[in-house]
Image (tube, rainbow, N blue to C red; front, side, top):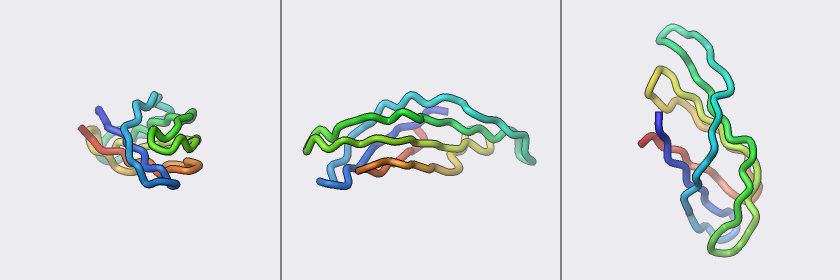
Length: 85
């Protein structure tokens, strides 16, 4: 499944695209098929508008196959938005 990630800077509210390096970290068999957890644990960006440092991690779950089920981000100075493309 392909996703698009954008990050919104908490300081200036500027939103920009983020080319994450997601890695399949975990799979679980469930009733409707395989649940997959993808994570990018090493987010290290600067806002292109105000230069604020944004660091942390972004995770998302695919379940059932092809459906973006849940997104979780732990970013300092930013918020992540993940959408299926």
